[in-house]
Image (cartoon, rainbow, N blue to C red; front, side, top):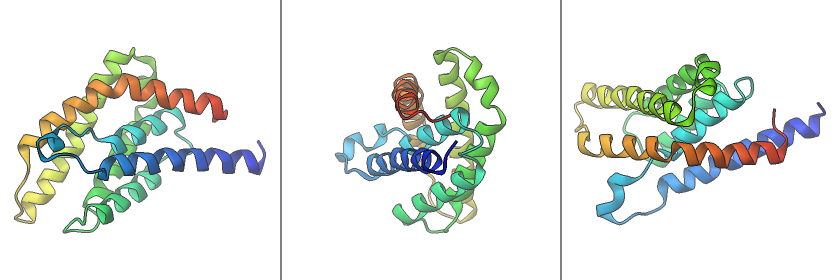
Length: 164
């Protein structure tokens, strides 16, 4: 593999995360805000299970840190910790997750996203901040439901760009 190929791979992955960041902060009507899927989490999980040697815990931490800044988190690093954990679990189970059919993958995605949401809620409770339990379940369920299409779209991008 040449250096240009490696650079192209990382630029493609970064472009996918950039689009996920845009989708994460794109304004929604107030009534639809709770239906927003965890785009960044889905993209992180996909790249962790597709290329576990390129997208690892460090990338998860950086992605979470960017989200901390974008969402103006009261404690810088809380989302970084959550997304590093998400990347760790995804990389650790990547062979098992890839073996499952899409609907079983969606259930695993649901479990992974619930784990990081509980971590975020626990951190907020420790900081004496209000935890948002109502938006939590709907967002996670929507993320689970759109996983098969997200997987297919990102797999198509990965194959077209020749990322291994």
